[in-house]
Image 1 (cartoon, rainbow, N blue to C red):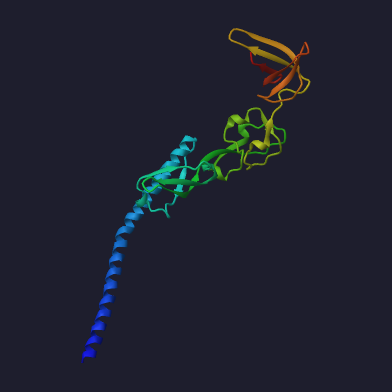
Image 2: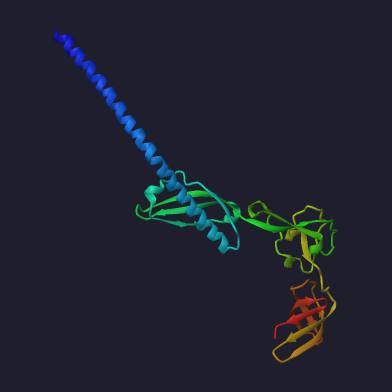
Length: 244
């Protein structure tokens, strides 16, 4: 009888332990369910802070940014007092960027990735343009796209077309790049030119001979009538200017 009593007590103890662990697990499961929404809210708040931070950084560069960021991997609740920053190598024009998060109370720094889109307007060839032909805005059209997806040198300012001609033939649909253009020559080598100097109350003009060829804004060497060689800036067809 004594052995049977001990065996029964042992079975009751094992059942109690199993029931105890089930109660503990149930408690932890309930606690996790309670804490999960708060964790998600914290992550969403941090993500919103990072998005606003990057949009402000983009505005300072002259862009309106579209930002996508995930704070997964960082417990926002344990980093309540924080400071956001961009590493020195960060360049949001590349599309993907790393954002630093300093947790001030813990003295820790974490890095999160964000995708940044910078929509911009750029110029595209609308009709065939022959090699050497002067390029005008009437031959182009505007399109819009993410800066990170565009090749280097795509023209986004019509002012860059001034006195420019096509370096090569351009087909419709071509994204207009600065490499496809060259300055239209306004002065040829050995050409007679007029050089002017203008001050507050005077204007002087002299004649000379260009030693170089160039387009608008280029600085060329000019031989004056007495043999003196000076440098002057091209301001128009056969016209150059020197600083007084």
